[in-house]
Length: 395
Image (cartoon, rainbow, N blue to C red; front, side, top):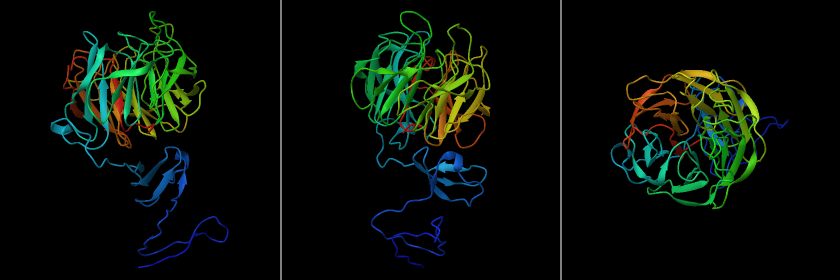
């Protein structure tokens, strides 16, 4: 056993430190700083178990070998989130919550899953009215559902995510009434809502608005998208960036293949990121802090494609795999709904009939969708749902 008692370790040129062999105990009451760098500077081919701090995601990560690569260290809750039976009974970890929906009418249902398990969603509570194609934003404790195709398109509804219950008035209004499935991006402090369609008309616009999640009050102007769009993929973000992908252009039903991004902590207009593999609307999108998963949608025919992007860089989307084509999953327009933990993306729903199922992929790898379970509450209202996740990439 070795023992080192020093305040700092470095070589004489301050470009590195000595190698310590054997079993070493660090007994300082303070801290140590691991190697750190951004996603682009990740070393490859290092020994499995290598450890570093990612400055893009603000998370610790470790190397699991050349096949899987770098994986974030995921903190587990010490207490169950509460409620539920079956796979959700006393479940720990990330909660995915599906809000509203459509077909044959707008739904007021809120239902949830535990992302680390497999099974059927269960009742969480209700919205105050039926909604579809609104926008969801959230941090780890609060979720807002705003706008939508029915009800009050300025309305912002609020739920506490760790408990279960009906939504309440969020204490403010959107700055611009919106419907048509805008992009919802979230950080630990801010919700950002990009694009959508105006009300009472049906024209796409390029407005970006934002709100502070832990306070009440009205949303305010953030900036503008490069291109007006509706039914664009949302819930795809890192701790620094929010992604908008695909959608309808102002000359609908023309679909676009462009991807744009914003910087969450500042305000301003979106910037070009790259292109999707296919021009598509109603795409399902979600992420951990490193990788965004883009799935399904319509072009105008049904798509089974799953693609991915690396959020810290810019560039075109790359093929990930294919959605399962099972009888309980319809991956066509009406967009699928996606939620993530730091390691898994769950993809559910679509237009009906048939959009009652869920499947998942492991984010750090590539491959096809695998069966997860199904919607247990009004399964035929699986089109145009909003989604909250307590483990998404912006947290």
